[in-house]
Image 1 (cartoon, rainbow, N blue to C red):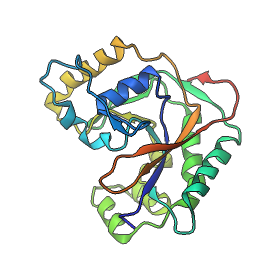
Image 2 (cartoon, rainbow, N blue to C red):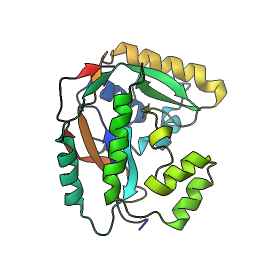
Image 3 (spheres, rainbow, N blue to C red):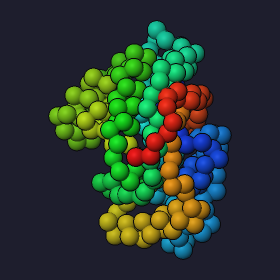
Length: 239
């Protein structure tokens, strides 16, 4: 099973949005096209090794997780998953927009909404539940590896039920920009990222108006977008 493809349901901004251009360039990878991109030449003074600091999140592309990566159930096909994505997107959803801001979450930097929005959390919870029908059961080895990372009881319960320790009450909508950053380097990296966001500048409001299906063909492959479904709902409202 661990050599099989993995899939994920993400929010990935439009490829031509300034936020996506910023995020994908910081990571050095475009998950829409499935190709490497150059790091911004003006991101910092050369003292920061962006290739190193973004190595872990690069594999996933610039995104916000709605349904964490999973192996497909043997009883399901990729086309059935694609069909389910479009069916779910067409059910009618409250489309929200958010003001992106930079924040340190634990020990990594991410783009997050300036203000929390329960509607976004509800969308993630719905994706977690609906698409769980397409997830293969977790292997004992994978479960042991995840628990060894130091999960709390709530996270272990989420892992066992949904295959993701950071679902539901543990969920935080965020778009990762770096891996773990040592405390001594945080000020310099934060300053560089903030300057990069301001130079574009990124949009003041980003609508969560689509769902993207991403696929990782093998354990050493990068996730890439293989399907996009527009959310059907009312006019976008900013959080």
